[in-house]
Length: 281
Image 1 (tube, rainbow, N blue to C red):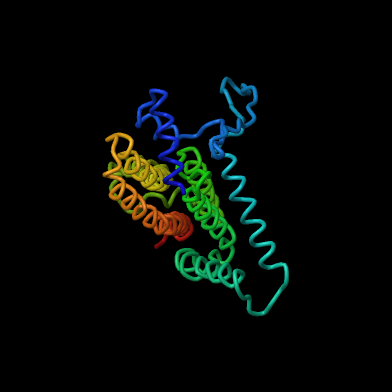
Image 2 (cartoon, rainbow, N blue to C red):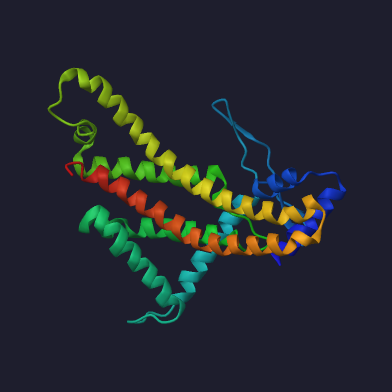
């Protein structure tokens, strides 16, 4: 269905003189309209706010809408699945519980320790399920991938960054945390090199988190659009078996990537927080 919708829209774009590249960029970028079966639903826009000389645009975009849908889905899914308390959850509730226990036992506790692992399991599980849901929504026709937006992944990385510094200072003390960033016992001149590197490392970690998730989700969808676009670009249906077949294969691969990227982001977040908490290791 998504392939047919894409090919139909690409044909309309070609008739208007729109290049295939422009059409692909239109579909992977954020926008102020939502394409519903050919009908363009315009989303609310607001006048930008100016705060301390910075222009803030709080308009509702497509990716903002997708994040709302992901959050609403998770609230309803967990609320309905666990509306009745049972000793052993079954069905969909059992799946959610198994995934939550996986986050706790395989990600949180091994990287954060027993004390902070259990305390931060709700945070890490929320991050895991939100990223996973946002990733998978992009595979559904008419929806978009919010995690294919660098602003979204950067915001998630900033949350990890703030949590890392906060819990590092809680466990080690404000002075002790910043003091232990650099190894002890080194010759004094080396600290002129080590300290800037360590401070830079604090920012490169969340940067890598944001770019990894953004690039992986964006690349997969771009490849799918490019493969299907071969039919329009070459102007022949002879390539359709190859284009549609490869696009289907990449789509199935993207489902696996959606799970892997949610796991990697959550795992690295817990690892960075754990390194800040247990600096002695």
